[in-house]
Length: 453
Image (cartoon, rainbow, N blue to C red):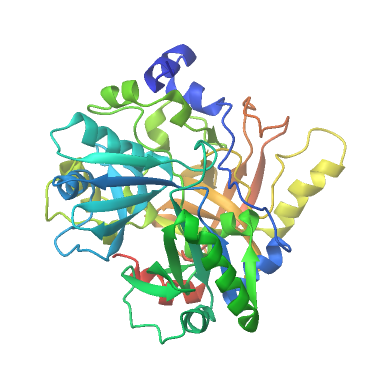
């Protein structure tokens, strides 16, 4: 029988010890790393049209039954008042203390039929409450291609960029109907019915296409064939993993499942293999110091107190006293270069900074300082070709969140942990400047304002 998370924590002595030294790898995208090179692939969603394969790295949880919507409403902070078939939303869940469990995309497929798609953190949480609560629901779980035997149930492709609309009209042979953001439509591609979510990534317009796995190759071939006229670029996992830096989405904040009311039952239920790994310069013994609220990550627009849900009362208090906000930190070019140069100099080098994404644990949590004082945490970090900057997404105290504020990111661990991606290194301080999130002006003005669906 698989070890439970509760047993693993007891064995390690604490949740922090377990996570900081976990042997789990950072998020893996089991698709081709680069079709050309990640720099050109990053540029494609700004200049032409990008085709990304999302079929393999995410988990699908299909939820069916007469109580499916009630389960989602009981566990999600979102409003479900006007939620209907052929709509989708960014589903967000918190624990009883109002701290973030995670988020995923929720598709309303048919009456009493939903698909929750994303990383496993919030998916595990919803499934646990559905199985342990008084709900008439059933689940079908399709894990990612790392854990699943056989092919996915669905193919899932992303088309993004200024030419995405024109390509869709060419490949379907008809004008694309005016579909609102996070609404779905059905198209015909190579005589196959294809469902599409009107979506966006890195601030660019686009479509998420999905259907039965057996039809995926024909749909992909049609997109590639017709895409030649529009400069279509196949995007691999390296570029795709960094796209969130432009749209300012933090993909894997530490889920608040390691403490709090009624989470002990959950830790007994959850396999230890689902715990993930914790990386970064924040080294507190208090697991709560790694938690964030939805407001820390800019999710306040999605919170609705029009229904009862787990954590509602606590979240109302967080809403009234939101202490942090999401920003982009643009790292100082000289300091980044100096950290990389240390690998070519005598002595213990700085922690290697990988490009285009520098995360070395599932949950990246680095200290952010002003005059030596901790003022927040830095999450995902990486290089944005379209802006020619190295940047990270961060949750910063309101007093220091104004654009232009100078801060310091502490990079590297002290002491070094035993995670597989951690080599012997020394901590360094890297200067950074606070900028808006998203950093891309196009993304701020044309994407995020619509994303509270």
